Length: 296
DNA sequence: CCACAGGACGGCT
DNA sequence: AGCCGTCCTGTG
Image 1 (cartoon, helix red, strand yellow):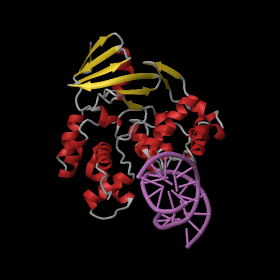
Image 2 (tube, rainbow, N blue to C red):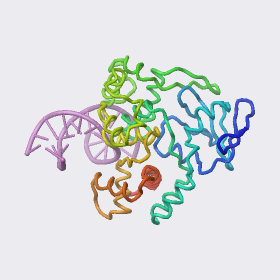
Image 3 (cartoon, rainbow, N blue to C red):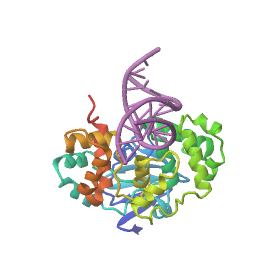
Image 4 (cartoon, rainbow, N blue to C red):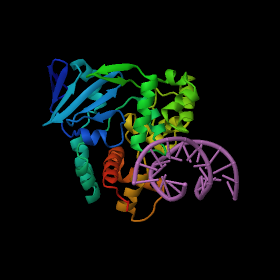
C-alpha cells in the first residue's frame, strides 16, 4: 500500500517502509532525545513506545519495523518518526548557514526529532536534570518496571511507561526505589498537580511557545531547559533551543569565542537559526557531545 | 577516599 | 532581578 509518499509492504508481523530518507537509527536514538530504545547485537534497535514494543532496522531507504501492522504505521509510527517532515530540505538550509553548522549537520545526517508521548517525555526530562544519559535510562526503566504494564516480545519482558494517575497514586517512599534521588519528589508532586488539573497538558500545542513553556514551568522540577526539551521532543513546539552544558559549550566555541550567558545564547540562536532553531540545536548537541567539544 | 558531572530550586543580596 | 549553595547517584 501507499501512504503519504511512502510505500509499505507487509510480511507477517513485519512492515517494510520504503522511500525513507534522512534516517539513521544510531543518530536518532543516541542523540539524547529518547531513553527507551536499546541497540541489539545485530545493530537493530528495540524500543517501547506507548503500548507497543517493536524492533527496527534501516538500510537503503527502507525502514523495517518488526511487530507492527500497516494500521500501526498510520496511527503511530508515521508521526512518531516525524515522517511528514522533509529533513533533506531542513538540512540544506542549515548547511548553507556557515561551515560549523554544515559540519554538525553532516555528522548527524540521520537525526530526526521524534514526536514522543508528552507525559513520558515530561517525566523523562525531569529526571534528566543534573543527570547523565545512562543513569536517566536506568531510572526510567526502573519506573516502567515498577509501575508499567508488562509486554512480552521476542522472549523478553518490556514495560510501558505508567500514566499520571498511576504515578499520582504512589508514595514518595515507593518511588524512591527507582533511584531517582531528589527528583522523585518532583515526580510525585508533578503527577499530583497534573491529576488535580492544576496544569493543562492537552492544549500545549495550540498555545504559543512562550505560553506552553510557562505552563510546563508551573510543574515541580521543570525549569527553562527541561521545559524546552519537553516541547521539542514531544513535537509540541519545534521553535525552542534547549541550552544544556553541551550546547552552551559548543555555541561559545563556534559562535561567541568567549563565555556567554544562557539568555544571550538563546537570543542569538532564535534570530540566527530562525524557525529551524530546534533542529539546529539537535545537530549541534549531537556533534558537541560525541566529539566532546570543549573538553580537555 | 575524594573530585567531578549534570539543572532546578530556594534563600540570599 | 541575579547569584550561588544544595540536592542525589554513578563513575573515574
